[in-house]
Amino acid sequence: MDKKSVKRMVMVAFMVLLTEQLFFLVCGFGLPAQFGDTFMGELKSKYERLKETPGKRIVLVGGSGVAFDCDSAMIDEFFPSYEVVNFGMYAGLGTKAVMDLSKSYIHEGDIVILSPEQSRQTLSDYFNGEYMWQAADGAFGMLRNIKSENFETMLGNFPKFALQKLNYVLKGQQPQTDSMYQKKSFNVYGDIELDEDQKNILPNGYDVNQPVNFTEDTVQPEFLEYMNAWAKRIEKKGASVWYRYCPVNKLAVEDTEAVAIYDAFLRKKLEFPVIGNPENSLMDAEWFFDTNFHLNSAGKEVNTVQLIRDIKAMLGDNREVAIEIPKKPQRTWEDASEKSRIWTAKDSETYQGEETIVIPENVTQIEDYAFSNCAGLKQIVLEQKDPSKCIVGQHLLDGTGAEILVPQMSVDSYKRNYFWSVYAGRIGKVTAHAEK
Image (tube, rainbow, N blue to C red; front, side):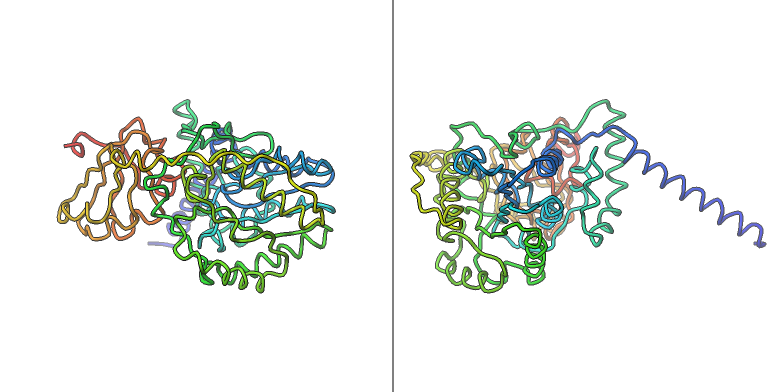
């Protein structure tokens, strides 16, 4: 091949590549926002509230545990000289993302309370670029506050994000939302608002896929350094930074006696105050809703009263917090035990050697690693149409390359669901062949 031909081929390849990049850029940035009504779409509102709210603020930073577990209006009543901003979002996004986004608009006089869930993912430098694109859709200016080391991850996720937007535009419909995991479930403070009669809906009262540990290896050393550096930057602005334990379902804690040892370790490593008694974060299962970190409405009130007491103690205010604590909701999971069904690795044993496993509609929870010994498995067929009625953890597909097939009308709901969204890339619709 002569030099002219080689140059021509290189030029054609370059033009194709440039055209492809322009196509993604137009779809990603040029098309109307599509994710505004989803759970992640709320982050824009939280960001704007923090940016635009004047005066002194109490800023609550963390994952969905903060969004579910705090009553900002109640806090507002006890601290009238402060505005409250709930900047809790989603563990799947990563704690560093909300920390980075919040620090730019913290100013003198603010009280910032960092309260990530007690889990290895939230206490690490984990960052999810796909969710960040969805959260920033229509408000891309937020991204200037994201650390540069996370942009490589985001760039890798951009083509997928752009094609998703194009697909929704062509279909003339935006992403489906389900249950409370959507933007309209948040109030003006950024709190999730549940119906008052919500109770614990977890089989056995807790999520077996979310064991909670208070051990030193739960928190990543690099994340400890990151928290200290983040707090130092905020304190230089004249704000106060405190760490507070996120409420956790006591049934999920593997060793409650380890809490005091872990607390001593954390207070030694952090260069800013840890407020409150960590034992108060261990709450009975009746106070929770759908995860080991999400409180129901009664549990939220109990936690908020304790949070107010913790803040008052730090401010040197010894006046009593005179609020009547709600009655503990009735235990419901024992009554529902016959209706509930947890799928385990033992259930999968009968399918070893087969390519398809069918999960009946009555299964309400699937244990992590349930399919790890099914080497030939290609399809996991779910008969449940409502993803919120079947809880899964972060290791559902560990040990298997199988795809997840769900009813056609439920595909988008599964991909957007709080529990299932981590597996969005491997979720598809059930075919007639698979159903057989």
